[in-house]
Length: 271
Image (cartoon, rainbow, N blue to C red; front, side):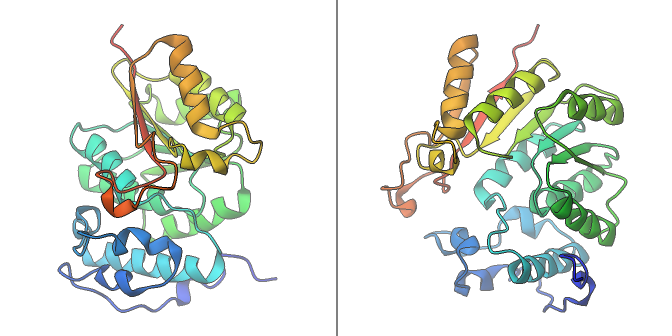
């Protein structure tokens, strides 16, 4: 039986220079390339430009392979990942929990970043799906990034996942990134669980905090935005929910933050 990662090593793609890598994404029709078609984005984003030729070749191969095998690979956009990369690289952050890695886009790019920073044992990433976790693990092995990432199969709102993360990181997380189920109740559980483990002054980041992204909640209870609003209001903790107002009617070309799904940042007060 053919598994999702069984022929990943057979991918052959054209190697691009630092000046033109990803520019051809603008001409691709798949919806995953939407950012590259937005006005004003006809350039190589820094998160790609900073990769070595070998690293970029692997990311190209990852795009080709996931496009063949997954209808919706579900990766975070360039806008959201750029925020994550800036917080981490600009502040020497080396203790990260990722809730939801799916097929590994952000995990690979974060691990490349942490390798450049010289920060091994820095990312503990959780996903409930063993199939996509093995797929992600295969790409991490190909990129020789196992030293930087630990993958965990389980519920990202469970005590088991929290204990495993704390044991592996051997430090309080400085940044926690939630991009998992997008369900209201589960997101509330994740916020409750991980905020207590977060280092004072650290960041809790959430993807999909807009009105538009509420449609991702299959329970119809308002998804990440409703959960974040309730959690923030109950605890009176300052937060910013970028593009909270976006409901899908605004042309993305008119948005300053070029992602209609939104991005949330909660900073734990110094205690």
